[in-house]
Amino acid sequence: MADTPSPPAPPRISVRTQTLSGRLALAIGAGLIVTLLSLPFWASQGTIRSVVELCCYIAIAQMWNLLAGYAGLVSVGQQAFSGVAAYLTFVLAQNFGINPFVAIVCSLAAPALLAVPVYALLHRLDGPYFAIGTWVVAEVVRLIFTNLSYVNSGAGMSLRVMTQYTALERNIAICILCALMLVATVGGSYLLLRSRYGLALTAMRDNPVSAASQGVNVGRLRFLIFVAAAVGTGLAGAIYFSSQLRITPSAAFSPEWASIAIFIVMIGGIGTIEGVLVGALIYYFAHQWFGAYGASYLIVLGILTMVVALYLRGGLWGFFSRFVEIPWFPTRRKLEPRP
Image (cartoon, rainbow, N blue to C red; front, side):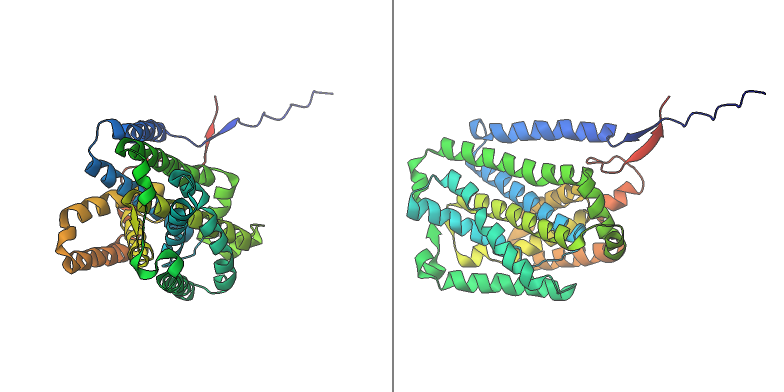
């Protein structure tokens, strides 16, 4: 009897999740983090304050991008979380004598605890109803702090305990916190999207019903993303107002924070980390150069946002990626045959 030929060996397949552009972006990002940490030793106070402001824009926008771009939860009330974290930082440092930089970390409990009942209250709402609900919650929180005498009501609070530290010490601590914030918000989002939970988020973004039919717990995943986005937004708010040394309810709970996040994500490209970075840079320089024009400047930004939303739904990064594929934060998995 002739020998039966053995079946051919299956082809060897490897999964590629990293690209050359991604490696270069990681190297550049590490260099920028080192530069951020070195700012207190060579940069002016104005430069440091501007960089801190830009870092906070990136963090808040990335948290909104994660919330709306993947979880499908469009919020216009994220200022509630940045405000409560910032106020708790001031209270812990000014009224209880806790180190203000330690207080920033401790204050993250406030947005996390606030996010739980807010999500429980609003999770049954969908689309614009959810967005309006988050705005209502933010306004309620603002009114509470405006009339709360313990935090000096509408007059706000000053972080006078910062006078115990030299300008160099304050700048070093704030820059370290900013670096950790970027690693947690941008780097953490990148690692999340590259994990199996990132696959679930992508499926949920594309079609929640289909994702649920494949075993994705959409409700639990949305809840976890909502809480994580609240904590990241709160960290940005605490760092920003601690660097400003002054806080008021009108500033802490201003709808402008949500508007900034929406503008950055829509202009740069929703659902992409690269889009957030591009949008944040555009907003930052536009604000620096044209912010003095007031209402006219805001009208131009609004019109620009609508134009991009109508004709460039993938944002500037999405438009650029149509012609050149050089992802800075690659999350796709590509199958390639191995030799």
